[in-house]
Image (cartoon, one colour):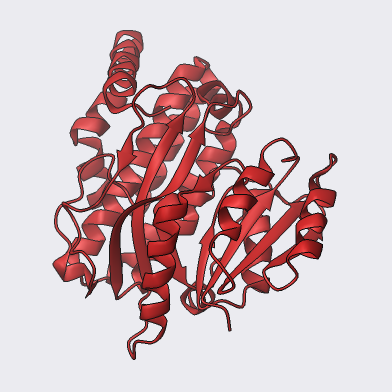
Length: 339
């Protein structure tokens, strides 16, 4: 059995996927790279097959009809044979020096009696044109280089969320929690991280800048104009996460519960500001429906979220209130650096 399965979802990725794959191949023979060609119409499939032929003991290619990023991850999980599981998008890559540390750590953890559910490392925003590369690190929140539980987690600041880029899950845990991402939907990386959290009991943090998250393509899903066009997919993910949070009421660990609530808050705020910036009556109605859904299903969380600083800034009344919401968003873009 391999130590780590890495799934690379690819759709028309011929221009950048080789940079990603080259970086992943440096992980050695204990890594299984599963390239999922998600119905590409360019040379993606041929490039994937070339690597599978050149590295038959490491690279596996799966061709499928187009199902979207989530279905590509689902397919990768079905084929994964490694103890641990990670997703690396085809326009991103990993730091080779950090990769060595990650693999050494995973190999050591694989030999432990107590299997770790989630391994966390840092990631770096490789933003096109930015002189300063923003790194998201967790050393202030997690104990380093040892197994720990939610009880030992310190405060996670705004913007310090655990994202797909920073996690490696135990493969069996993802299957046990019945992770199934929706098809033909962007932004499912949030569900990928969020849904398994109630099942995560043990964690390990490695303070290395492992994942390099590229931001700069005009057609990229996190580009603001693209997000506004695809707002219904963002909302679909938001509702999934609300349902997951509502179903997690029985969680007794308050640190985990608070983290899940804070994560849900930021996703709901992102949905809200994109709806406001859409500037249509239909979008404003969708924003009302989103907040009302939470109110009907979890009043306590609704009132906490609505009266938080972020929640209040998204729910100011009238046209002038929406203008203030947009100004707050623009300031956050400038100082936090998100796209």
